[in-house]
Length: 409
Image (spheres, rainbow, N blue to C red):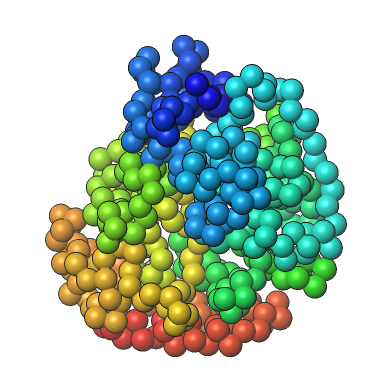
């Protein structure tokens, strides 16, 4: 039976197996920390649904997944085969290796890479996604093209390909020819959230040999002087993994709802639970106001720390509403409504009652969020002007923000 050895925080803790297209995961006897809220420590093997919901969500989605499959000559609907090819560095603290190929035997290196080479990688993402052409087994979830590199120190121009025990520190996304200036869009929305005081991954825009890229620091990696790489992995799960949704991310097709995500936080062992619940609600309001209709369950995650969980910094904040080719409908309905143009404060109040919280609480969050956005926008304009970022799209985002705030007044 084909098997992959599963490493967790660098320790071999179990096996992922496939039989008749069904997946199963079983812990080794020495495992002492669970991989997932849905995969508690036990002697018995886990069934396909529980196994698939965790491991399938480690893989990229849509076109990236298909491109990886073509390049590696495996089926795009075969998560086991894909993880065998690219599961060396995944989100969080998970690594997968073909059975019998010891992790310690893999070559470990930190290889300098030039800005021109990075530009080439970014340009070729549609044909050779992630870092598959560089013999690096990297898997990053999501539908946007991206690569992952080590940048040491963070604010330097020292770029490295990380392999084996060395791990990446930053994710870099290229411009997308189908969505104009999307890197400025995402950096603007992420910077706006950070200025508002929302916990947000640190982002920037950099020039790589004339090719612009959106750079975001990984929050599932931290400094650790005792390790070979000087870094350590922090384990994370997204809400689709936590809610046992292997391949559904939109509520209409059976994906996560706001209520499911909220109740998961409320009923799970989160540290600073009240803060996590409030941040989640603020993120829902913020995403609505900036026009981010793609805020689905995979775009919310939590970190494993000391036996408890904490909400991860926000990421993938994009105003999708400025792209007319995309569906305007929300990934998760608000008060039973998916069309953002029909949503008003009353829908948020209905949502609050469904969550069994006082409507006055969501009213306060709406007022605070709208007021803070209007307060910090001039500062963000100054930051973009000082950095020389120019995009007509920013004007459209601000117009959409003004429209959404008016809807909620």
